[in-house]
Structures are given as C-alpha cells and as structure tokens.
Length: 196
Image: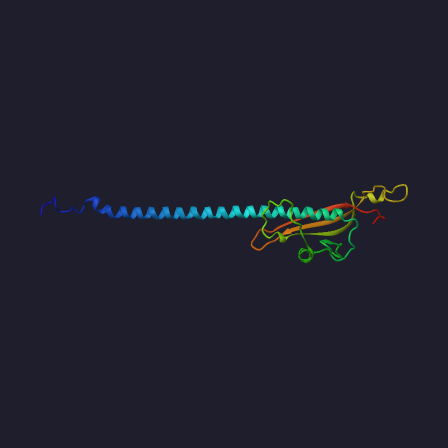
C-alpha cells in the first residue's frame, strides 16, 4: 500500500466532516427557537390589541350610560326621600356612609340598564351589562357660607346657593371582558325651600 492511497490520520478535512453537521444542527435549532419566539410575540401583540379594542368599546358604552344617569339626576324635580328605596335607578340619600362593598351591592340590586345607543356603531358585547345608578348625596351650599347671606324677605339671597348633589355610577361588567367603572358627581340647583 502506498502512502498516497492510505488516508492520512492527521488530515484536518477528515475531522471536520462531523463538526460541520453539528454546527448546522445547532444553527437550525437557534433559528427554530427564534421563529417560535417571534410567533409568541406576534400572538401576544394580537391579544393585547384585541383587549385594548374591547376596553375602548366598553369605556365608550359606560360613558354613554354615565351621561344618561347624569341626565336623570338633572331631570329629577325633587330628590328622593332619605333612606327611600331605589326607583328606576334613582336612590335616596343613604342613612349612613356606604362602604365600597355596600355601594357594589346597592348597584347590583338597583342599577338601571342603560338604553341602547342611538345609531349604535359600537359592537359592545353584552350590552345588557351596561348599567348606571344615581344616588342622592344630600343638599349642600354651592359656595361656602352663601346660605347666611339673606335677602330682603329673610330668605337666602342667592337662588342658586343650595344645590342637590347626586353621585352617578356607571359600570360595564361582562364575564372574561374588560370591566369599566365610571363615577361622577352632579350638582343640581335645589328647589326653593328653607335653608338647611
């Protein structure tokens, strides 16, 4: 056997044939992991966008319900009696300060379903879950001390001195959806009556 036909044990090409396969397999594994990571990121971004869109729809529907509750408070000619039951989403002043849990229970029991939006372009899932509640919070002065300024007849000089305060709360709650809670306080001029 001649030296030319015998494989050289020190030939560097002979040792690298297995290494090339190993490097290619490692690169293939890295590329696969990168592709899977980019797919996960894409799916996550898609879900985040859908949740943001859902929250936007829920917020708009809840805001419309809040405006409806504010209109109800402004249209109330006389406030409900303190401690009276809620009627059509309008409640009398509570006998004591309510905790957050009590407000939630009062809302679930007495809230009024918001009327459907006119020209509703919102595809709000579960529109029956858009509700509002108006709670009378009592009578107050619009400006501090205005009830002490008396007019010629002995009554309060400023007809807009006394106001009725209403707390309006609107909620959208649906299973596995965004939950939106909006609150506002509406001041309505009090009907003419003696000072508090």
